[in-house]
Length: 58
Image 1 (cartoon, rainbow, N blue to C red):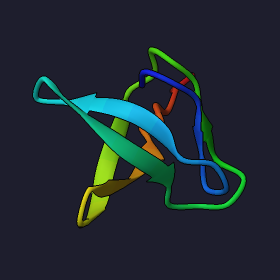
Image 2 (tube, rainbow, N blue to C red):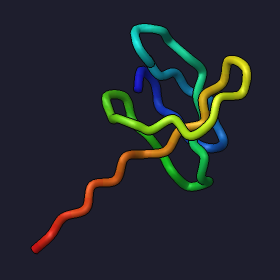
Image 3 (cartoon, helix red, strand yellow):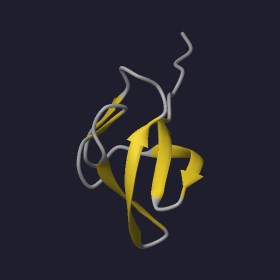
Image 4 (cartoon, one colour):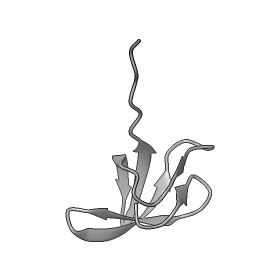
């Protein structure tokens, strides 16, 4: 992430060295600069992304 990204507000992400506009796929998700995400869809020049969740085991 280059800038904050939510479902409601477009932000910027870098994918393979290219900067893209992006929005989160799920309302309520928020991605902060520096976080990793997964691309779920591409609409023209807009990436739809989701956070990469890591599960912890105890």
